[in-house]
Image 1 (spheres, rainbow, N blue to C red):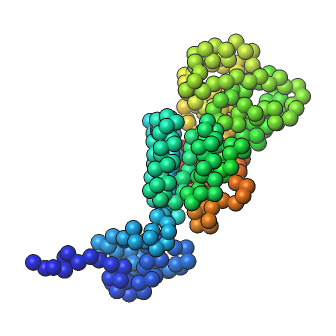
Image 2: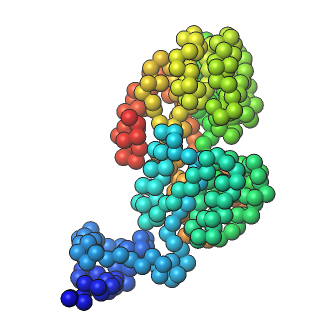
Length: 340
């Protein structure tokens, strides 16, 4: 029996096969940004890895560097199509930077949410993106301030000492209200409850003379949708800014006399017909900034103090621009395939 088949292949073997130095192989395979290599050299190393069936010793790498090159992400679930799209896009973006991503699904149960973060810290995950509401138990989350595992929120909670990357709805909503007023409409209904800043947004936008703006709460987890639709139709509103999910749940039962402007990340073709405009919270930018920000914290010793609140601007597109917006998104290499 040929005992060589039981020999453990090392980075040195890969280096000899590829004709490069061992440190260069290690730097390249670990994703070290200082390892500048030509495409031809990368191809030789990749070919050697494949030929020798080399498997890096990740434990040894992590002991040496103090990093595991892993990112955690805490989500409520993946049953909703958008959740699956978001999870996949985040994993692919992390891989571009040489990181792996582990998902923890909590079924939106607070105890599971806490357990997920605690377990990730115990298993030396380098950093976590937390997609749920952290303000329900602020004392629990304060323990991660300045800790070895940075926790990055996707909702803006200024009262918590943790960094966030979140959407700023103000630019898109302000532009939509100005367009509504310019079109001669005077009564607007703003549906809150989908994003954490909704309830405070309208009062922070300032005055819009000639516009009467009413608000109404809706969230599929805590609101009777049928009753909400009845209230909307009885409101005499001429225009409505709302979560795109509300239009999906309404299934065409909202009066056609009310011009709908959904807040949305990725276009849903079935919802783009018959709407007056859209407020885009850019999906691709969100994915890229979230991953890039967390990795910068991991590789530079954590976030600054006070914790940065990074806001991504929303944008309003009137009906006449929706087709061009959709086409541009479909050409985006990071999220185009998710637009269908």
